[in-house]
Length: 127
Image 1 (cartoon, rainbow, N blue to C red):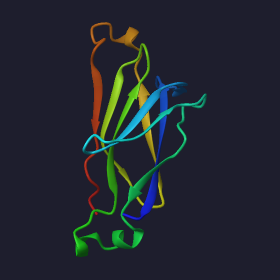
Image 2 (image 1 turned 90 degrees about the vertical axis):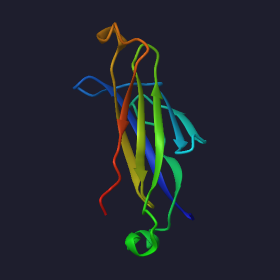
Image 3 (image 1 turned 135 degrees about the horizontal axis):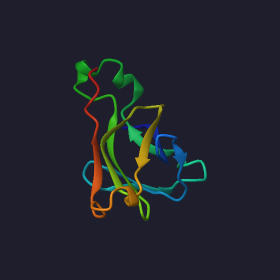
Image 4 (image 1 turned 120 degrees about the vertical axis):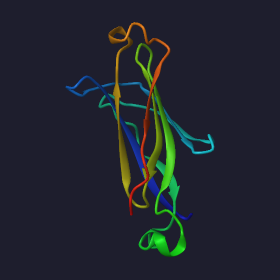
């Protein structure tokens, strides 16, 4: 792996997509190794996080070399008084910025779910 892709998280609440500031976003490798931790800004965005990916040339014909043309990571989002979010298998491609949307739900809307978290699993691309 000698290329980089990037991931940015966009945290918001409600269908109006109101940006949320100071959401803690943690990105890990599939084995749980921490890659980065960022806080969202006033616009609800994190700074782009570089992720090592396969070379772009390897992704042009992945079926030939058995290599997936992306790196998949885990992403976790936390904010006080909001439901936690876990996103599995978020795919990051070389030279591309992946934007992961995070719709945060206030716990006041889920009074019986104060200790639950929301899990999103992204299936692999059919390339």
